[in-house]
Image (cartoon, rainbow, N blue to C red; front, side, top):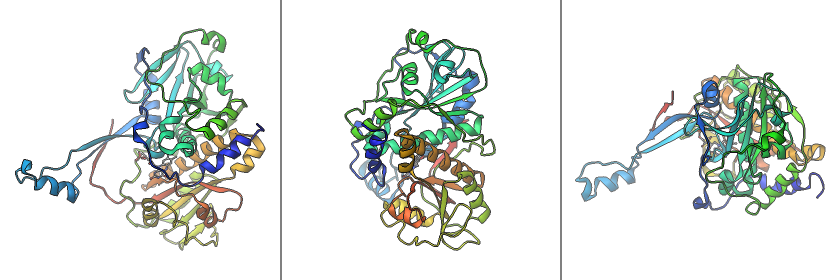
Length: 437
Ligand SMILES: Cc1cc2nc3c(=O)[nH]c(=O)nc-3n(C[C@H](O)[C@H](O)[C@H](O)COP(=O)(O)O)c2cc1C
């Protein structure tokens, strides 16, 4: 297969909507667990890991829609008392994730061992003893984080389309990490070696980004570490080798082309990690200010453009990142979107789009370009979301708001829209939400 061929064959799967029935019985476990791993408290890494990927809030909702109230209030068992439906208690994470699937896993390497972060229990599983830092990075850092993706956790729901939100989720985590520490972010590495060190079967779960910080002592070679036994996974997610053939071909091509580059995303301590959540009931049709929009676009970076609905001082329409009007027709932008996305788009004050020309990047740098571009997109859109939170606003990533109409409305010719962030003021809901300390 020629370089870039698998990526080009995959691209049509990553466009537009994932429109099919979801087989929920095929959903794998939402958290990774090990059979026999030693578990240790996260210690010095506790705050970092919680702010990166932890469970951050609990939502308590008591459904009381007319139908559930009527059903119980009129039933004999309720004796006429308004016994409401069963309450729902759900946890939420510090970061958003496409379809709330949370396919990413975080590994930590220090001088003593390689650990897996278990957010459900906020503990570290010891994957293997030994100093893995040099073997994972080729450098001698003080601390290493590896971000990996479990394909099927998102794939069972979105099928081949899943590779796109999976990679964007990694970008979200990279953006979050760069609010917390000035990591060097390696997106080009020897995937097979890193996966072997993590004990991963690359068609179930694969390393996507390697983050390093500081300087430490020299660790042993990969070969010496691989001789040490590692913890066994309790319930491995299914392999995508046959389930998602286009994704598997693309991934095989990436594995066959080890790379070596660090991406300079920049440290953004000013974008503070927020106690955020995506609005559950849409937006309230309130206007935002031009300065708020400017701050969000600045955080989103050079690939951002926007559509304005209600921003004081700007007429509705499409704009470039510096708020130069694009003189395009936005009237049909939402007409093919899912109903809920269309409704929220019209209620939101503005929609920020992140664009990229993946085909050109595949021609320049090969199959890895799909993954890298979607990671960059995830970084940009999460930075925009954090900037919105910093402005006291609400935001929801809607990757499904990207179609040929959105490309046209944003004045794109060869590049395409890769995700959309709706920003505005949330419509109040009826559930109680509290952050986890
Ligand atoms: C890469 C990415 C893509 C997303 N795409 C959509 C989308 O197409 N439609 C949508 O309603 N929400 C989308 N979301 C938002 C998630 O549904 C949301 O983050 C998740 O349900 C968790 O809820 P929370 O953000 O309130 O914590 C996306 C989030 C991410 C990170």
